[in-house]
Amino acid sequence: MRVRRLLPVDSDATKAALPGVRGCGLPNERRRPECDLRRDGVPRAPEGAQGPGRTKEGEAADPNVRIGGVMSNGSRERVHFAEGCQGRLRPFFCYFGGKWTLAPHYPVPEHDRIVEPFAGSAGYATRYADREVVLVERAPVVAALWRWLIRVSADEVEALPLDVTAASLAGLCAEARSLILFWCARGRTAPAREASSWMTQGRYPLSFWGETIRARIARQVQQIRHWRVIEGDYTAAPDVTATWFIDPPYVGGVEAGKRQRHYRARVDDYAALGRWTRGRRGLVIGCEQSGATWLPFVPFRGAKSIARESYKEHVFIHRSPADVGPAG
Image 1 (cartoon, rainbow, N blue to C red):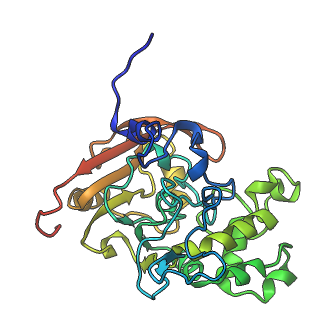
Image 2 (image 1 turned 90 degrees about the vertical axis):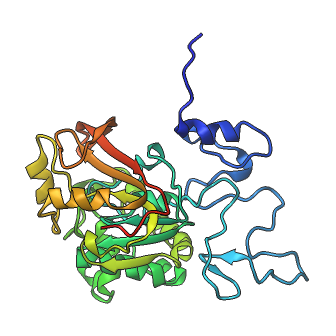
């Protein structure tokens, strides 16, 4: 029989196995039925439960119940999700280098606030959407898209056209067009100009713009009303204690130059980024690939690019006391 030492990442799985203990982070998405998520990313409440904001006929709604990121009495609080589900949503749009798939393998947030200074599609924060999320994004089109997603109604999303033609997109706002065109091709840092061949050929229909993706986004937008977007580079991030997920364009690896060309908003000085990263307070998670030296990265796990090419993810993890002075 093989025996291994339990690591911190095993804690959720251990909790899930004990009755009455919160947590359901079982490997390979094996979760307790009463706090599972449907495949579309919506939390599934226990059978017979009324759920947040819902009451039996004739009962008054609780004014302190969290609904879609804002308390029903008007104050902003963390979103209420099914117990143990940790507010997991699915991606709102595709983005080159997104971390939604890898996010469960990184340390779980240790603070109520999550800051992503290189937001992109916010793959890490999307897994923990009930937290106070601050996205910092330098690319104007991406920042504008996030601001629109935070305020758009579910009905407006449901009204978006399924046909990706010049005529159908002509009457839409720029952000709505960006959302649809991000879903027309995989692994991009800007909206596509047209549908990719994979989309037009009907390959992987659930990975491209269509009725399923549109309905999923419509269900999810209510749950990120409390998120905040800052348009600017990483230095515009608030100087706060938080869980920092720092995922800049990669400089390491043999394909570094190729990867940098994908990004419209690049990093000019990685040494300065390294100093800034070390100065953050709270839990700091830095992402890179093999070959990067601007932080003392260590091997993390193997991964595959959008082109199905294998590479090695590296990570920098640092925890600082919450009561230290302001970061430099």
